[in-house]
Image (cartoon, rainbow, N blue to C red):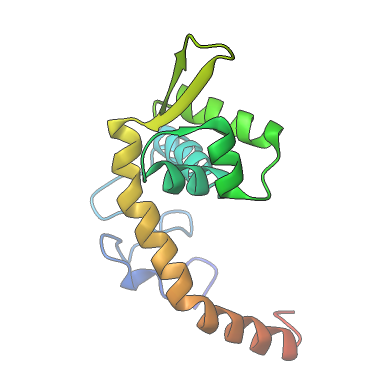
Length: 149
């Protein structure tokens, strides 16, 4: 395989062609659109973040107060939880409801969009749990062999 041919194994990905474009595969019948790549990267950065996944999963059981979330997540700092729920609220995945009590009560809840994220997040978590031993074995073989040099 030369530098101008496709990366090994990518032709097995559904929706990719065998014709390289600048050394990269593009979906069959589609052109590479940089704006789409940036959009996908931006969304994946949010939904793929460790704390986002855990907050979304925890809120999948229903609304929670800030401290309930914090206790459920264990090692998250107050600052990180604040940043995470604010980002999720900004992205339309979580709603924040303030109740006029003394002290004020604040509940966080998944929106419809946030609930739509539960299925792929749960599937990814299940995949990770199922494949962790195989990944660990692969890492050990790689490390024992001295890695790719």
